[in-house]
Image (cartoon, rainbow, N blue to C red; front, side, top):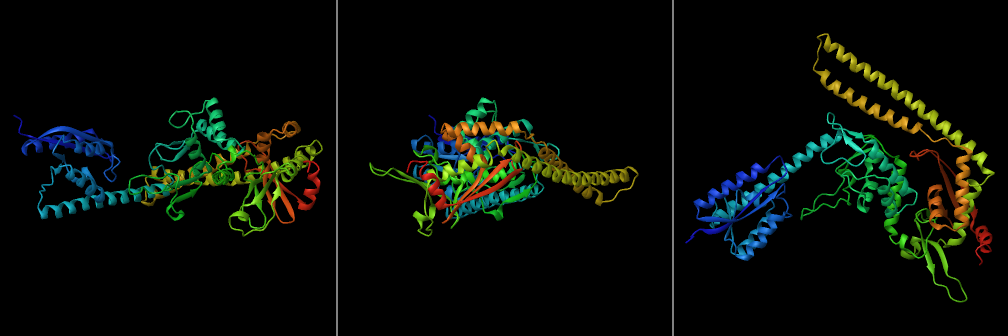
Length: 528
């Protein structure tokens, strides 16, 4: 008859340079301990690459649940820190095991039920938790030093980048970067997530893991500041008490490392900021794409009196009075702190479309626009050429200093400062080469011709005539920068993008009208 008491073995290793051999060693020690102390191992639970600072361990939870099934009378671990490094979790789960009649035994820590052992056990658990937190702090300290040098701190790099194995710095992956440019371009041109995903997958683009795009992957890419050339580290919030991290929640700015120019830029800073503003506006207005009423100026129209975004609003009509649809200041309903009048949607949207036609999309405006745009483009190219010349001159000087040090070493002259100076010069050289690459990309612009402008004119007129609301919305998002409504007047700022992929090159100008003039002009047009 088997007189040995049934016991379970629990083994674990975290991801810090441990392997399967660690598990094997733990299990051998547990097996030896069981034989010496009258136990027979009936179940084995193993968590691989799982931290003991959290209870989110599948086999650990499985073991705790099984303790209620009377399968074993003890759980044997190699050390108590294999069970948990969190004192709260340790006390909670030991209480559950005890309630189920199951002891927790440690191979290396000889503990019994005496008061002295209870105190010793508490000290051991406290030391394990301290060790874990101290290790995390030291690791973070080292990672911050790496981050301050704009080097990769581990994990998979974002889509659009590879890591240089020698320098650990970010390199452009041009084929992936094209997908990023497509994503930001489509988003800023009014594409919804579904349409963006469909277009990306149709064109054969893939995520970093080689999978088709989904909604969550698009949202995270749009939030990644690295794409604007800013190296970012320690942005996401810390794990909570349950070991869960909310990647959508940022830490305070003081805790985040941000280095402008620390990674190669894929999009302009202006485009990145526009995308963030649009995402924030969509978050405030989640029902836009499901709304019965579509507001062409959503996200672009603001109250001139208090600065808050204006929102679409409608009141039900009846047989005598038509439905009243308008834009009104967000403060008007919520806080009553702004008394700016609401303005009819039909009036303001027709005015904006008319301004687009008057200033951009008409035959008479084409020669004037062509002249202005080419002058602007020429001026921008001249400024870029000057910057390029300065960077090239600095690069040549840096390269010369590097060669001088190499020559000195080759002639048998060496000084301790050479090593640190060489490292500084190599970093400076890499930074200058990155800046030159970015500037060269800005000079590659699409030629602006009368045919280009006429095609835009034709498309715009067709969409307005057909009342193609989604396409009109795209034109407005692309060519209207801001609409500001005051008590007595309305200001509209129009913009022109001068190149594909480099929308920081833009020309903008404003137009204005009195509110009273607006009402008189469009009352008849909308049949009121």
